[in-house]
Image 1 (cartoon, rainbow, N blue to C red):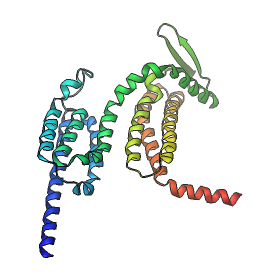
Image 2 (image 1 turned 90 degrees about the horizontal axis):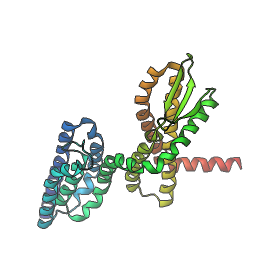
Image 3 (image 1 turned 60 degrees about the vertical axis):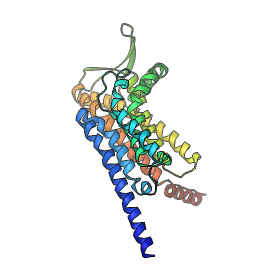
Length: 300
């Protein structure tokens, strides 16, 4: 029995050492990404945190065989050359970016763990690849979703008019754009253009990617996940309507200079607040459902 305990402790120690070495290799390229583009580190770092939460689960995964380690090494080394493919599509890409990092992580999993461990790699890889490619997806969707820009503008106009602001839309033929115009509180005329990037496609894509990652890890039924996904995405578009409305209200009360400052920060603030609110409600959905059911029974 003593020998068995000693052997078991030895195996666990080796697995911990292997897992610790894996995480050191996972973290190291984040410094390289930060060197080339500090802001680009955010999504890969979240991917690293998701991986870190899987530490205990990875301890139970067996080591990769020799052939798989060779394949993983080729993928990991090849990740440093991904840049030469990315610049063909995105000329402004950094030498080492999230795209390199995603391929590198795939290679590390093949080096350190048996093939089945790739299931545990899905969430961080999907987050990194999805979030970094959302700009390209949004650009690809532009021809299909651009016609909704005018509908978005008219919703904002209706809200402004409801609040007592004399907002109007007119078409500027020379630029093929619709212009939103209204007099500010100081008497100056405020004009603005709502383009495709304003309607919230990019934020909806990022929200959807984060949602997929969270729901993939959640054991709830498909029906519940689908219902909350629809609510979440619609809420993201609603928060974007609120964002644009707040910007115009700031222009109305405080002028274009203050409005420009608000324009710069309000999107991040509202999106972060909506994310926190949505996932807080989702995590407490069972308690909320029980309270609503109890209240409904009382009034009937």
